[in-house]
Amino acid sequence: MTGSLHRVCRQRLAAIDAAGRRRRRRVIDGGHGVQVCVDGRRALNFCSNDYLGLVTDPRLAAALSASARVVGTGSGASQLVTGYNTEHAALEADLADWLGRERALVFSTGYGANVGVIAALLGKGDHIVADALNHASLIDGSRLSGAAKHIYAHGDVAAADAALAGARDGHRLLVTDAVFSMDGDTAPLVELAQVARARDGWLMVDDAHGIGVFGPDGAGRVAEAGLDSGAVPLLTGTLGKSIGAAGAFVAGDDDIIEVILQTARSLIFSTAMPAAVAAAARTGLSIIRAEPERRAHLHALVARFRARAADTGLSVAASDSPIQPVIVGEERQALALSDALLARGYLVGAIRPPTVAPGTSRLRITLSAAHDLTDVDGLIDALAESWQALSGAVGASP
Image (tube, rainbow, N blue to C red; front, top):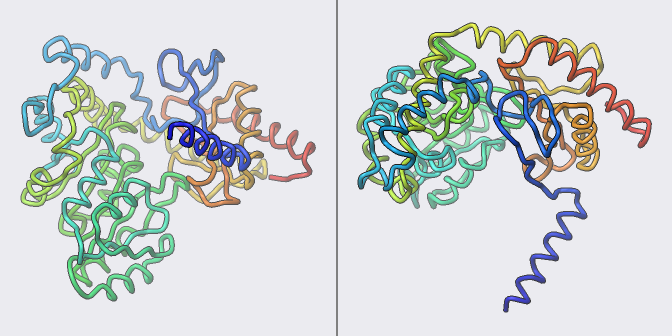
């Protein structure tokens, strides 16, 4: 039996290699900020989700260290046993205040939050209407719920409305990312909220890539759109991107959050995040609210990148977020560009199927407030040179 398992796995790996889709982990030695040592090589990091440069901020490290000296390094149990600490409670209160919601509930991971929330509220006989480019956690949460799934074309409000209208029985959940992780574009949140309300549906928005970057106080795309808990009753996000820590949350009205606490299996059966991590997240959140100049600098970098890319003739997807995908097309070409950039001192990830559709492999460039204009200019120059060299070798063009 073991021999057959080895054979099956070898066959699968051969198929992955033949398609140019094998992924490998790069080893970071030291901090995970914009300056990294990756596989023994120094490089500027342009593929992290650390949008505000807080991952290596000494204030977060100090908060984590001080808390760990008091509460230790782990929580020891799930939240509903003995894993829930005053640090968790304080973080949830801070999140609720920041996002303008009655209550927030912290999860150990963003994947666990989205899977847990959807499966806690929807089941057989219900309907989930979802954007075609939603994050995998939203897709998997929909599958696990047992509800009927209706996928609408990316960003197509009319299609979402039609799907909601056609789901006549059971509860109806309309679910979307706010900022899409591989394209960097933003969902039509106001229009989606309108159709959800008109069809008596519940709107769930994952604002993981908007939190900290957009909106008043950096409260995200949902806040920027002026959508309260009546319009978006289920708001999820992460603590591991702009906030600079780890974990995730759902925010909403008190009774909704209480039902999720009581029934979300990914929360009930998971060890709570370490309380010291919650302390670090609180510090990151306070910095976001107190230092709007970080967001201003980040948006200036986005504008600089897009202007330089246009001048260079690079094919960059339409995005005003820190996610700036350069569409390449073929898997091996994307990998070759990523390797060429690393040789020049720039760490940029090559994104390939199944994460994105075949023929749309890309370099997913992400900007951070810890970068400066010189970093962006250097990246554009290195990318243009690398692409020109590759084009000359294989007869391709940007």
